[in-house]
Length: 121
Image 1 (cartoon, helix red, strand yellow):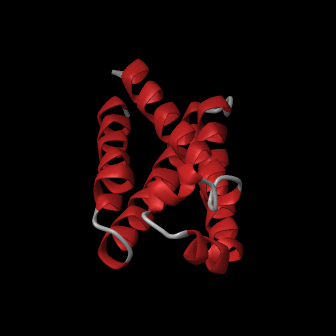
Image 2 (tube, helix red, strand yellow; image 1 turned 120 degrees about the vertical axis):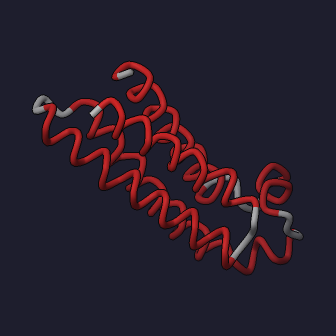
């Protein structure tokens, strides 16, 4: 179960690297417009805000990667719980306030990862 929990945490971290790229680099490109359902004008008007969001997603990814490489298993476990909790809260908030699909894209995977980590404990 430990290996599965590690894989799921790594997938969540990679997902947040991808979100960082979408929000910081690809926001006003066809891929970003499609991902976020925006017009070019909307993307241009919100580019700076999106980059800020992307940076925060990068911090979440960094914390999850840190949890995977920390040499102390007990502390690594606490790091995983903290950052997965942050991702879950962000996904719940985003799903409630921005777009329902965030529940599925961010909150649900974080909840699954959190359960996997707790079970692997």
